[in-house]
Length: 202
Image (cartoon, rainbow, N blue to C red; front, side, top):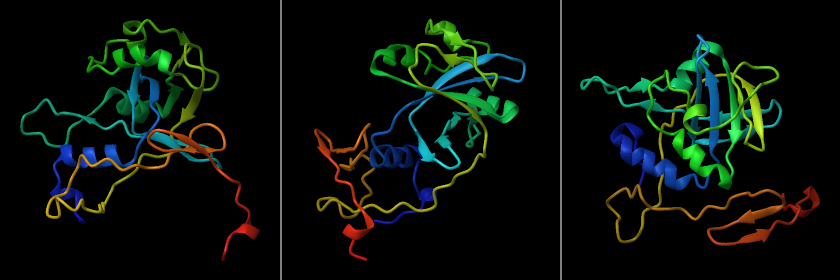
């Protein structure tokens, strides 16, 4: 089935993206506002997208509008801060940090410091203003490259028993790349052979 995103509800489009592009790491993004107020929030639409130049991409999304008639949503603190300062830090979340990460996912007012809420240690950065999460094993100090992105048309192969309906909850068994020379399926990891030009049938 081929559909236009404009024909889908936000919930259905979100489910298609969430269940098709999976699994994904979590970007734990720290920012500061123009006035210096710290913010820390997790985002699961995140990945490394390029090495040269080194680029990380994540989608902060929008918060539901407080106005009943508003349909476009409001910028979350993370997005607003990055627009104002052009800087942020991506901290990597480990299993041991899952509870603290979850605490920072709440819908807090902008005056709340999530570092304090989750009892995390802000660590001084080297080249940007937002603090790093000291408890995170890996952090990337980043400067904004650009804000972009619009999905125009998703395609989905239909299950045989639902030929007339787009199934937003159908999970694809996609291959994923863990650390090291391996691929991973839904319940196992297997080796990946190196491929050279001489091996390819071109």
